[in-house]
Image 1 (cartoon, rainbow, N blue to C red):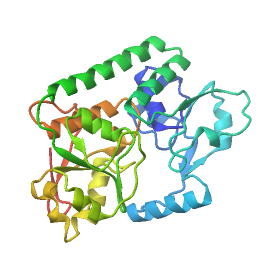
Image 2: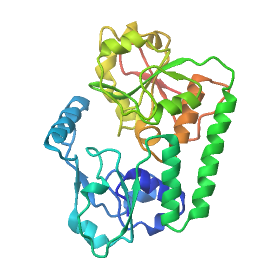
Image 3: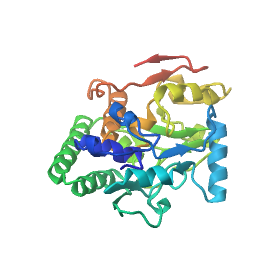
Length: 304
């Protein structure tokens, strides 16, 4: 059983998808995961915009609660032998600490706690070991490392543009943990985040002060289309066009849910996508990925 979308993706990447007995309501990749039984639900009101979601998350934090509801009866009915959980975010996902104190039979709990790219790769290996797929996990990790090294080589020696990554738009949050590492490998210099440091909120004036050459909107939990809709909170601002990245048409909306906020194998796709935008002609974006270029005054766009 997987209680975190990254765990679900890792299991499928290791060809263990057929062994999953249940997943969370947020597990949407690959498509086969959507047909599996769900053992969680969200407490976020349907139709909430970014401001409303942030308010509900903050209220949950104050109460010491999560925005994920764990269905204890569904969990018990699934009777998993191995349970993939996470320790990173106590608010927006079920953590290992939230599991019932006693489960019969007691599953082997595999905690996923990667705060960095190396940590994510270690999680993949840990899952493989727990599922009896050590060799498959080692091969996947080696392939992901090779892809990252290839990107680093492709951008080696070229100028490194300055970059800003936004994990949330209302209010603004920078993108932390592994995202600054993704930017660095892709050949950019992150002005807002630091490796292994969680994201924090900051005022728009801080963004104006940093004034990066490239700006990437990658809201946590949103795909590119939803992020584009939410981007109006920024593009409708009268000072939006003061940003260099906006004036130079280097402001992009990407799928944060798939490639940046979910600590699974597709973080490497995210690196390749960023590199293809920062250094066009040197790196090719992975098949199926896309970036939406934001216009100056509204969320109307062109797709790259």
